[in-house]
Length: 480
Image 1 (cartoon, rainbow, N blue to C red):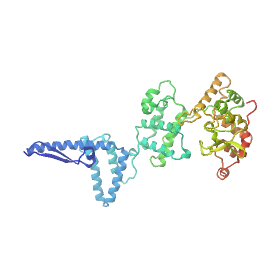
Image 2: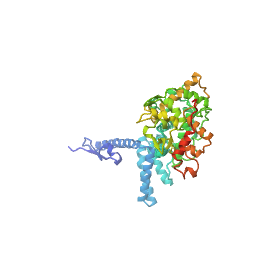
Image 3: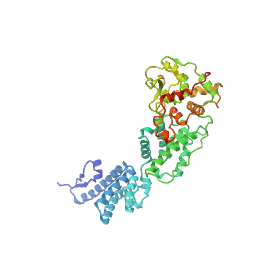
Image 4: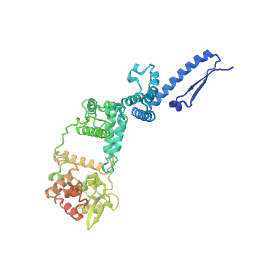
């Protein structure tokens, strides 16, 4: 007995999901009328399946990607169909290809009969691209541009391209943290859609966070609201103004970068959220003479052969060289070199281009060199720490704890206490009091030489013996 079969062509877009180009089903009946009824039922069934598969395929594409792909398709159509009427017909067909399946999925005759919010964002993006093409617009509307997460990732990658000005890993991790918070706040919408009220609401939220909210690795997987639930307790500690300003700086920089690339336009909504920071009067200030006496007396043991005591020598080296903490901690015996009878520290890399320099070893540091190991790091037992694994990270914190203990013990006052960075300011202060020209002092401290005459036209600068004369001006007083 002959039976009727049902066949339907599978749309190209969903053929990979279905696994075939044609669906054929045995209706298991020889009755023509029953077969027609069953065929209509199977046709409705498969069209619904195709629509669902289309929707599923579209959902895998972010709206901004769909928008760009449709724009490219339209550009191709414009090349193929030069006649305006033919092009309009092709655009109508393209529109129907997106609108009709979506209308069937929503159970309406036309998309205009439903709430626009119910339309898949990807379908809405495709239709918006067609509308823009008909109106002659070339830029994607704000809501169909790259999501915030994509834009912020591109920004970080771009600022890290320049090896000379590359941010530290600590800075990058801090930027990524605030970008994650803001991404959650705006549901990863495009930055171009962000308005002032949204930004104000974000800072109102983060101001309630505990200062230690980011210390656990688990926080990377939590949303901003989840973090607030765990780290925002009434009456508890909150983020400092300095931290909030760092958040503003990161978002402000992202907006300016995006603006230069046409991703956003208009007033920067982050620029008005800077917080006034109350700085401790003596923060990073040069140490006073009385404070230096105390600090240099806190450690009396210079260490043994091959193991110089960092807490004893680091302040002394800083005061006699102007070097940064991590520059000193990163020195190896191979960096102690001699030229024209002058022994010097060779600093091959640093915070800025000007950090790359040579600093003669002060004569008062000869006992230090006698203790240093003849290979590897001059301070071999320093444990790297922090996001950038800097050798000065942990010892710097230890130095801070030691000076704080001195305040608690009463040998230092809180007003006298500065930071390790303050030693560099002592060096700059000493040079100025010796009436040394700024362009000469900069070559020891590791700053950019001011002006074009010396800064540009004299790249080599002072001879090594001239630098040695400058360093010897930094002699410690006998009582220290």
